[in-house]
Length: 152
Ligand code: HEC
Image (cartoon, protein in one colour):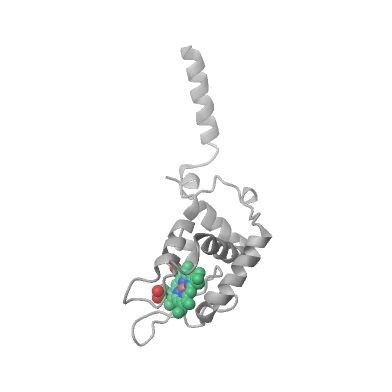
């Protein structure tokens, strides 16, 4: 019995030592090939339509944001950032993004309106899928491993 346990333990250690602790923290033990975006094309298309109808007026037709989104306006507020993977939308998990879209920017700080009661949960999910479909592979992989599936 104890022999079996030892065998089981050392087996586990062997597997684990394949990646360094740092690799695990950075989520590098998930290889990029394992990360695929097999999004439902209907959902992507629906998300795009919803985005262009509701969000593009501020964030741009293709979520490219405003060119000077990094510069605060005179009132200290920021213009709508790109959501296409070139800014920092990908620093947030799906849950955080969804909450932000539902509630909008912090009152008094931003101009991002809240969408609670206007868009359904499903509609926001679809929009987020479309947004993620725009992100370059590298950005999506970084988001997937370091943000969405952040090692606990
Ligand atoms: C009236 C303009 C406006 C509209 C319409 C708008 N946004 Fe925004 N959005 C902003 C601004 C401005 C910010 C920057 C944060 C702030 O100031 O509140 C922002 C920020 C965001 C962020 C956070 C980005 C980051 O890098 O953290 C997300 C996600 C987002 N918007 C999604 C959406 C979606 C999805 C819609 C449509 C359902 C939408 N926005 C509609 C103005 C807008």
